Length: 188
Image (cartoon, rainbow, N blue to C red):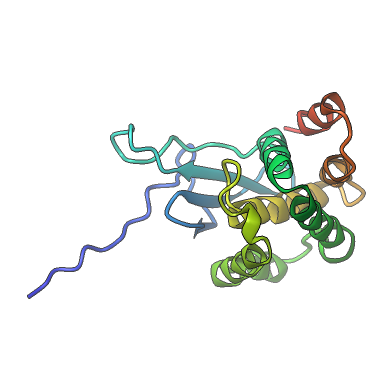
């Protein structure tokens, strides 16, 4: 009889708090979403990255930052400007037309449906094959982080615009100092 080794998700507790959902993005990244403290539907994002030098095989739990996202987009832009701009345009359109603050638990549950999020991320990744192996993060991971950061931002301030400004600055090739300034604005 062949024993099948069950794949286990590394723990994603933050300060003893369980995540609301955990998304296995791929074999390299795991994304956890937690209840935030700024409002009833506030979201906190955390992730772990495969780390072969670690005893557990995974990094410590990290917070994705706008600056990490921006640097990866700049790297991708360097390799394929046209395709990266297409991805950024898609995200700007997502921000403008499809991202709204959560107002009910049902809306939050729909947003955090793991299968739905993974399907969306897979669909987007297929649209940008030339960016697949460029930069640190996969398009799947960038899409998920971007979408959840957008929702997080709009939940706590429906008129928010920081992430949109970052996307627009990246797309229009603003100078690096402008991009870093926008991406490192600390809201927490």
